[in-house]
Length: 305
Length: 83
Image 1 (cartoon, chains in turn red, blue):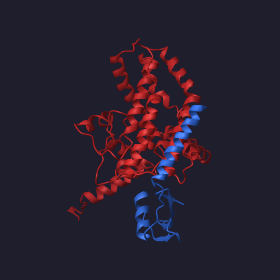
Image 2: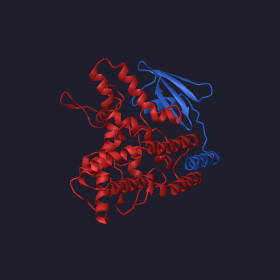
Image 3: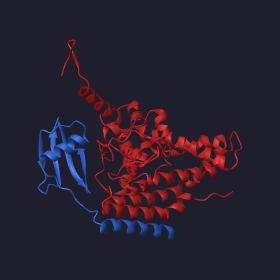
Image 4: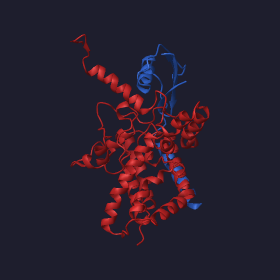
């Protein structure tokens, strides 16, 4: 059975929806665009398809080799497709969480967070270096289980297409309890936030239940607008720098490291490891400040104001 | 190659549309207070002792806590970083 390339099929719709969102924002819908930011996002998206063309064959070969060691022979059918879609989304959750917690993987993923805008073009701001970052290894268990590569790649495409539309400020909340189950524009806005409250939260691809299950869920608080972007935002729209700056940073930090432990920490630790700028450190300072404001302190056995 | 050229044309079309729709602002700092607030928000807890606005108010330099911080316009947004 031949399964369609859903990303190729969806690309014309991506272009039309970006144009429609721009016009809607111009007419007053919530959201923001900047033509230079749009250019950077779209060029990074175009570059990622070129990178996919260059390295895709090697990744598919790795998938095929892993599939040779499969535990079960799973046919391509509606039920296996549904199961594969859910398990691929679980694999995506762990890839995505690791991509924020381990600098090596972050170096490939950071490009997606490097815009201070949040609109449909941000969805297209994709990595050029995912192959080097070894992002594909998180999907290997699916092939070991026995899901055919064509089916997994079809599900990957569906997952990516789903994630396109949630990169928008024009949609506030979804009705009918869908916010409880699905990753939505609201949940994913939180993920793109650099506010201490929102750092490293909501890693889901399609199903937000993974974040609820694994303790990384944070709802969007309308009283605290999301500040999109990085803790240290880029000072250029150059797509080359956006694509490679974290790799340059890793190389620089490893060369400057004074010990093997420090070098390892700079590569395999969280982004900002050993500095006050890691997400964990910033979040800890924020929580500490909030605790000291919210709770009266016990001083000498008396509750202080 | 044709597909790449077509994609590049699509990029140019959307960037041109964004420009034509007026998404090309450059922010200006209203006063020192705005610069302080931006730095405090971006560098969680930073307190500036001194603020120097650029003549065109398109940026600022702040010092405090033994640190030097630059605020620069980046498209229609601000970038706040330790210098």
